[in-house]
Image 1 (cartoon, rainbow, N blue to C red):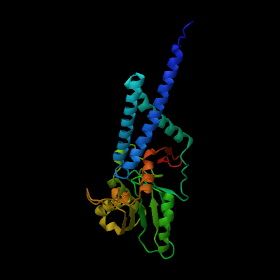
Image 2 (image 1 turned 45 degrees about the horizontal axis):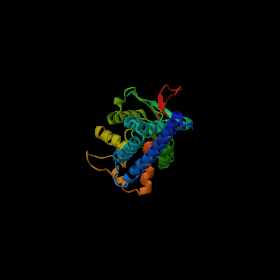
Image 3 (image 1 turned 45 degrees about the vertical axis):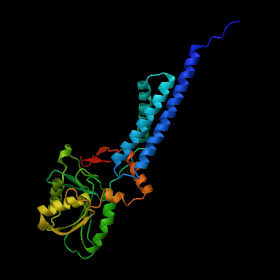
Length: 294
């Protein structure tokens, strides 16, 4: 009676299918463990670097453990398995992120109506809106300094602070250098609080105001502080909203102290944004020749 001879091709195919299934299970389980470790660690620490690192370490350890058992029982190279288990998820996640960015284009940025530009002697080309005083004119104009640096919202800021025009003041809201519809510098090392304060003084001169009322928020408060040190006689009134720390190492009510007020759900929702890369695109404003970032 003829003996049955196993087909080596079929056996090899079955073997590698089994290994592939095991690798898939290791990857899925490791990702689940890594994400779980990350999320659980957000309840312990408020430092994103720490809980992201923890999630990465948990993922790496889980992957290493899975690779060890697969290699031991399947008699394959540890290095090859680890490369596959560790590298494939990273490549897949990167591809998913790229595709998501491509199929979800950034919303079109529309310039606010009545937006104008100042060409300052400092070299800055500044986008701004002016809301004229209503009723009896009371003198000093109000200038709002947004936060960031680089976080501008000319449309909504002008709408909100423009209400102060009903009190008899001209209101100016503008995008600081490097933000919104204002120009950019070729060398980013040129951005500084000193430069922003110089732009503010140039603006005061352009609008022919002897003194100004400054309303500032966050980073804008730093500009206001720098400005009042350099030009104390030019400030009639000053509002500092959520300013930064006045000295190194002093908690100014931001960062961790704010995160501590959030419950677990709010904190997790906040931290998910860490996985969304900030997409920055530039466009050239043909009418002005300035470079603006969408």
